Image (cartoon, rainbow, N blue to C red; front, side, top):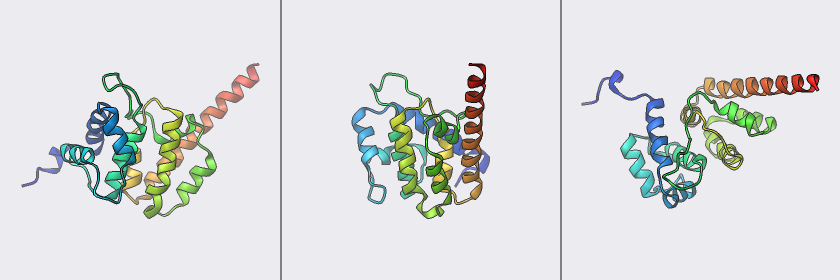
Length: 176
């Protein structure tokens, strides 16, 4: 018997709890998840997380866990780390990390089936530049759904943040 739809946790709730668990992992399991091949059987740590949170166990589900492990700030597991921030869109995080517009445009032009592979470069960029938390639901929706509205949301939030940053720079230049 499956619970009624209103009794199931939302994707956002599930990912919030998943992010909390991933940030508490020791460096060894995090490293294994970062290196995990998404077309193979998966790491034991993946399966523990997938079963605990009722996650997809296909390649996009494995890739999501891999990406979250890549985005998890490094350091001792007992130190507080921020991975998920529902108020900070992926587009905003990309602008703040100086992600090139040309790369974003190439990503947006890709067919859905190739999005996961291309998204790895985006995630690695963010991980290398550091971040203050990202709405990981944005990442999941881009991986799980071919619906164009998720790609449009990425473009909208990227360009809104880009425009805001340009306005701020122009105002500072005018004041100087």
